[in-house]
Image (cartoon, rainbow, N blue to C red; front, side, top):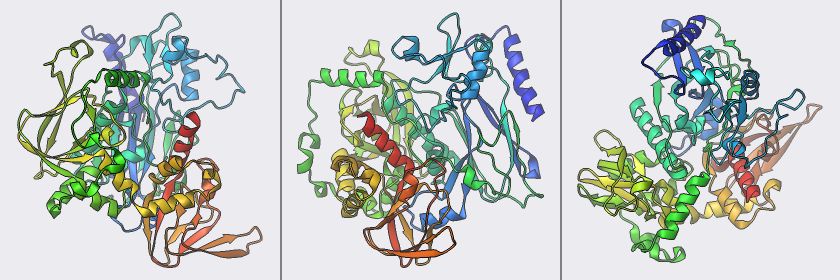
Length: 591
């Protein structure tokens, strides 16, 4: 660790000393993993807000997820680094001691009040953990000089930032050393642009769908890029390395963990034998940011107001009159595989059932394209999501100062390339599945090819017409936390449910275990056992239409289940993750 610290510090000094490099306002973050040869040990070094994550297999998760191919990933995401940003109270205090001001852009511009005493002794922890408490509007706290509105970095450590370094933004890394075990399957190193809209768990879930780490990288990068286009007027740096761990030899003794400047209370740290897994489990999958910036929202509104032509397709009909079956075409096994390879990497399709998946296969419209054909035009209203089966497609964005020019095609900012041979099937236009909005970019075919298109109304019909979800809404209404929700809110909540299958004798939850989900029973039966303080057990039979695990919704991250529930026959449950429920309730309060 001392050698790695010296490497970062020396690199920073040499950047300052280089006469050909302007390092005044041009720093970079850094995340690295050093592999200790045959010692089965890694050391993670972190400077800034890029991130290292490990995906681990756990026996308890295998039981919960069941054997269905449509279940969520059986890998859990564990943090190997902690973002160094002004969201962290310790980093804010450290930078303020160097003279820095810590303010958001809205605070700088006088649009939001400034709380000068937020980090005073006795004022509470005041520590925001990225992914838990986040700024939905894309306006994070930043580091500013006391003498002017610069440098404005959203991280508190970097390499090669001469001006920011005077304000405490230095190059010394935080580090974590730990043993690799047989449970460790995937290591991801990625820049902050990947994690702006995807959580650690979302990234691991996507990677776990692939057998080739390069294809996993492409899927995550494409998903991140698409989300940036949906919610922002720009894209951030999106860079990623993915490592698949095939096997780990038996470690030489007990694993160890060492920190420099970190403690187990503020960073997920575990021993090599996995004994601390309960403390390591990160938040369940959900987008870190799920709303547009004000700038993006204004741009969409202006585009809608300026739009004079109507879209001559199925969108002209009312959604309730939309005939889903009119789009149905039978697909071959190979075509279904291509579609599945694309949608399994998208967060929009992560919670669909097997029945819904089959309907989506049928509703996908084959769309042959010719070289030079414009698939999407920037600024026009979108109503379809596209999967690239074969072919090469450029993403072009017309700058603001060229939008008045009719023939402007803009600058190429990205390329989607699909190939059945390489099992590569990127997708675009995902935002159209959620609501009608002008397209953020143009898509132009650079070769002949084939697309699969899914209309928004078809997607909504597939999701909404599943009777089991409708029944689940009735059960959700019985849970205390959701009793006052409207029908629309319950429908949104039910769309977040994911399916989990269990066999007779499977233990679904354990009393005293940290919980992250509530379970709804559309069918089947379970045995619920609770132990009293005097050690006496009481048993209750749970039947169709019942639910359990709701107690974890009321507490914090460490809330535990109060009962042990075992399946008494083969059954399917709906799982609602705590983070999804809290996210929806939070958004409803804002409304």
